[in-house]
Image (cartoon, rainbow, N blue to C red; front, side, top):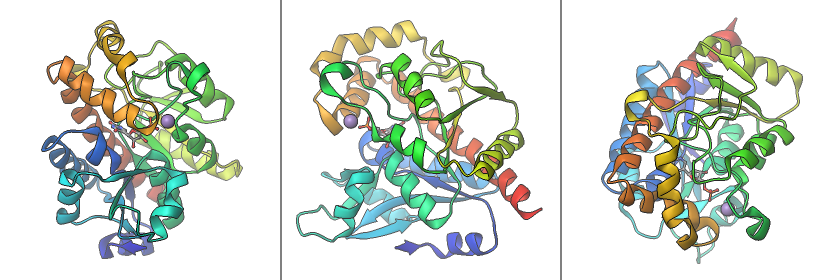
Length: 302
Ligand code: PSU
Ligand code: MN
């Protein structure tokens, strides 16, 4: 594992650090938007007073914090592999049949963040229960990870391409604390509301940090999932989104390729409107995660 010196120093000093994932760079956004977002998300974390730690696996080594060159490689190299929790051992085994660059999903990033002691993480939208689950059994490992690993995750809700009621139900079953940041309903990625309730509403990063501390004190494992609705100016209404999804979901490939394919297809069908919302929400989530990490560092040092 290679940890950037700046992150190691923050770790030693009990400073605020925010983990960031890399699958949204390699698979979630087109080039060059992906580079722009990766940099803006890191800048947003810094503006909040925390240190960003974007994760990836390069040549069998975990990297906590990436230099600019590596971010460009992730954003431009074809065939970057998408790593979730189950893929990490293979990617770290330096097996000759593994691609040289692996991007971490929500689940893999949480595993690595937990391993190095980073308590807060930001992404765009989490994975969840896919539509048609009765046939496919496709449920994102993200949900299982959230139930297991104590890394608070800031998102704009589950992606709207999912079966949102079943995803909400699954989060409840798995005992994930779902917090709405200044909202009562769980957001739906490009849309500000899914119409499904959160467990608790919070108005400030300090309140959220306190909740994370309380959950951690209970020793029950698992995450607080912080839901931050996409900014009003970039939000899309759920009916419009639903039309885009219905027009292409039957053509989506199965398995790990489904989510990247749908994100790209809907970006095309929406003339970039979904892409603009996706970019905005990722950066805003990074900023909020930074504020939460700072508040948590204050609590932990007092
Ligand atoms: N958020 C985004 N874009 C993305 C993702 C999140 O705005 O592409 C990624 C995350 O890495 C998440 C993954 O873990 O999508 C979900 O993939 P799947 O549905 O295959 O589990
Ligand atoms: Mn899946």
